[in-house]
Length: 248
Ligand code: BV8
Ligand code: ZN
Image 1 (cartoon, rainbow, N blue to C red):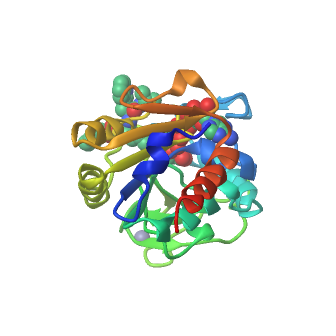
Image 2 (image 1 turned 45 degrees about the vertical axis):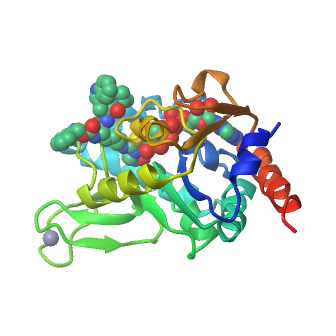
């Protein structure tokens, strides 16, 4: 199930970038965006994850984020998150570039560098003064609107909504790591959202070996040299066992 080429390339000199999406957190119980479980009260994420939706009905958008925060807070990293932590010391460098905002990679390990392309459920930002705060408290409860303690204005989730630009520094770092990668793994993403979906092609152009891991063959990355059609909570630990078995 694990391509021989991937196992051979994950040697001590390998520079690895892992692009992850909602599929890596599925086994933790976090709903994906476009799968059957991707809805909330019959809203699609693309309806709610926009500045327009927040401007129009901040209470509705905060209710969705409060529901997600409370759900994710009870979730644990799964064997796929932990396999990446186990793989990191076996190669020269491993960085995770995630589209996820659930914080499960960071909870799996504080050692492995994680670049969050789309922000975090656990950060809030003031719409007026821009103050960022970390907040892991329950909620906000339906109807509750969090306020900035500095200026009293509304706080928003500190995530990147559709139509919003990604953070320049994060984007630059992700591009730099991708251009230096010898192995680029695409794990649990439908590859629909840009610019995140553009990194696999950048890696392939830079000469990296690209492999995608997804339960859906249709999500095979166009730039992938190989594709592993299996739940990543199974294939990731298997990959680490295979790499370890090749080591003296
Ligand atoms: C920008 C944060 C410009 C919020 C998110 C038309 C064409 C191309 C692009 C566009 C277009 N129209 C608009 C755009 C741009 C737009 C975009 O890409 N839209 C898409 C919908 C077409 N992009 C943007 O707007 C971005 N910004 O372009 O800015 C700009 C520049 C300068 C100045 C101003 C503006 C911003 C995009 C960021 C959006 N924010 N999240 C939040 O989370 O609340 S995106 C959201 O989708 C999540 O981050 C999520 O991670 C991400 C991607 O989805 P996936 O992670 O892939 O999840 P999905 O459910 O889709 O797939 C899960 C996969 O896992 C599936 O394939 C499934 O088979 C697989 N799976 C399931 N279980 C398992 C598994 N695999 C393995 N094992 C399992 N067990
Ligand atoms: Zn403020």
